[in-house]
Length: 431
Ligand code: UD1
Image 1 (cartoon, rainbow, N blue to C red):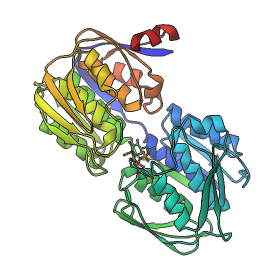
Image 2 (cartoon, protein in one colour; image 1 turned 30 degrees about the horizontal axis):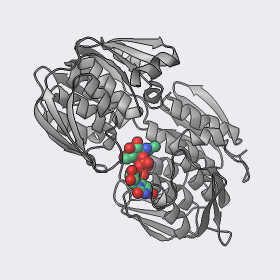
Image 3 (cartoon, rainbow, N blue to C red; image 1 turned 90 degrees about the vertical axis):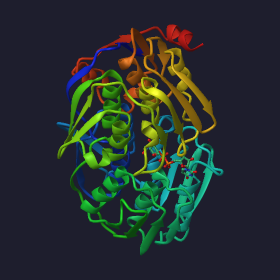
């Protein structure tokens, strides 16, 4: 198993190029199933979740060929209505549930393994199911698979009100509705940049989607979508993570290939705690020269503070002066990484959805274990600012969503080594 060995306390200096957005890619790649032609998708991040999605597309009959420079050519015309994505692959990635919307949209039926850990009862995909049903599909689970079939041999546009502004449900409903008969109106839609990116991609193929980026999205079904070229937006969370890294370690770093508007919610909080952020057209300069201050954070759907940045900010706030409060109001069970931060000396108390982070000015290196993607990012941020050496295990979680994180950090002066270790040693670390 791979781990990162990080000697902290070195300020970061230089430039980092931000990759394409993982979450946009995970929506746009399955959306190519709806397209009658070749799609050239550019700025595709080289991260393992995306590799897995591309493997799934190949396995179900799409032709996938790298075209150099982060571009991928995808021709999904070879996918058949009865193609079934391999169970083992689908189970490894939650976003594989987008295959349901894409298959349903194109073939009027879908048979996809339940994504890992999913519970079809009340949560967390009830809004996806509600959307499919409102469009005229019957949905049921059998033998580990979700089956969705257009009840009367067609899907019909419908108003759909989401009880929660779910990113996944908004995207899945768009995928299913884009070729349905008539008009679908999603109310209380998610407004995240990757929802907008999916809509822009589909519109570039001939779809008629209006309002993406607002909470009302209108989709008028179109019968034929044709291929073309599309460039994925930069990754908001990857950029935010490197901004947090500079906040924790100090120094001055320019992040290139970003959309500063997408970073505003993160920039605002970093500025509040004493980090300087200068915005340019397609880059931001982040500088930290003094001690960080406390703040309070509440995660919210976009344009609020993203839950995917909550762990990295908690790591920063451990280096701050004063006590900060973090309220997690989007995701369940998202404070698990805090026990690992405590191994580094962090003083944090968690009570349900509230975490109280006492800023103690410094952390010290320790062996820690990433339990998920953003938890791993938080531990890296903490390690960069900590005194001494931190061994971060479980970094396969990090590599699901960050392209070449060790190389990018080394490029700005971080002391980070990638090491292979015995699995039994890693297990011993977490107890
Ligand atoms: C996406 C992102 C993830 C991010 C999250 C919130 C991808 C691949 N992943 O996940 O990185 O953390 O948005 O910004 O884009 N919920 C329901 N019923 C549903 C769906 C969701 O109750 O049918 C609730 C759940 O409590 C869930 C919360 O809404 O925890 C947020 O879910 P959602 O916005 O759907 O996030 P994902 O699409 O899973």
